[in-house]
Image 1 (cartoon, rainbow, N blue to C red):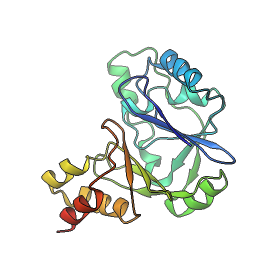
Image 2 (cartoon, rainbow, N blue to C red):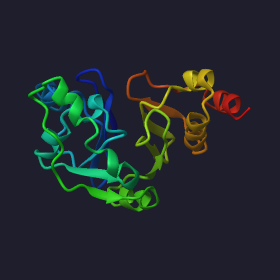
Image 3 (cartoon, rainbow, N blue to C red):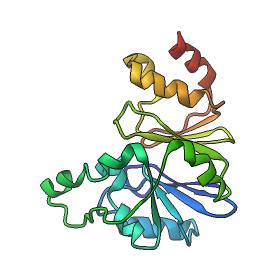
Length: 201
């Protein structure tokens, strides 16, 4: 089951497997009460793991607050050096509601992700998709769903024609994707194959 959690400016996603659940991303610091209201609306009572697509302020703002609820932080090894990269931004903004991430995450590699997700009853894998940032990852489900964070949307990717972005999109689209879940754009369902062909050419 996939549910959109929109309680601020960032699209966050709750994915419930047969044996556990994952929340993909959070919103800015200061949105905790809106988060509580939204999960109550959606009848979400437990979040086992938090997966951050990249560690920018609008995706990690209430991460530690959610971790304090008993949720574990799932970190991909390529993200290790970026976990605190937004701390200075919140300090500069004097955002007193921000709690820096202060926990020992569960660290896995992309290669280990399928086995880990399988343990939650979720069929899929996590892949490294730099382009928006060097720590960007995407969650790919076997049902054709792709959670890509802030990777430039497909139309913009074609316009930019950036090698790194294109390589990340081609990795994503090689998984027979039928639906793309963005961090800030509306979900894309159609024309995926056509855009893939355009990028490859």
